[in-house]
Length: 245
Ligand code: IPE
Ligand code: IPE
Ligand code: MG
Image (cartoon, rainbow, N blue to C red; front, top):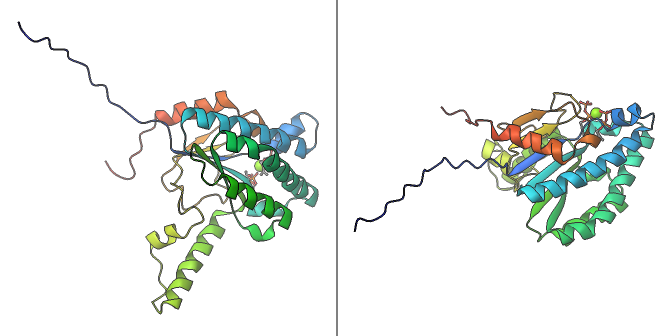
């Protein structure tokens, strides 16, 4: 008897789910204004979008979801808005911590903590410690962060170490990368910016060298699962070459 030969067509397997998605969450103020409300109303709704996108990221098997929540330049906003945003951050962390634990989410905050209140810093530290062994998803909040600040602090760290070791204080790209505040996080595969703006606004300048960009007119408080899926679909169609042919 002749052996039965089954030919299974080999389709090209392409891993199209990004490992690290980062978002410049923009448009909260405009979203509120459109509804005749104060800017903080939009920021509050924006927290709901973070929750929805976090859930969706877990569903999709994304390992890192990072969001730009407050830039170094945002410290120049009116003091009421800054205080409102910091208060919102504090409340969101307190409220969400049990859910992070339940869903295996590691919570992290990256940025210049020196300008944050002791209370907020304490809450952040507690939540980061409590969730540090969770492995389903890392949710990373960039708070009081700027790309230039990160590069400068990394360069200073390298120089300091070299001077202490009596070496010439020259910095290589590898050393700089290893001293960024994101050193243990893979560079973003996909960067989403909402609200129609098409700029980096001093976000992760170094880490986005080969990131795919996705811009949408949708304002951040309206960016939920359907919009997130559209961004992932666009990403899946991209061909990443990293300078090669
Ligand atoms: C993004 O929304 C959130 C932060 C920068 C804190 P905005 O507050 O920038 O909203 P728009 O851009 O003014 O609409
Ligand atoms: C970028 O948004 C910063 C954050 C989303 C935290 P901005 O609203 O501050 O950026 P610009 O001023 O429009 O560039
Ligand atoms: Mg804005």
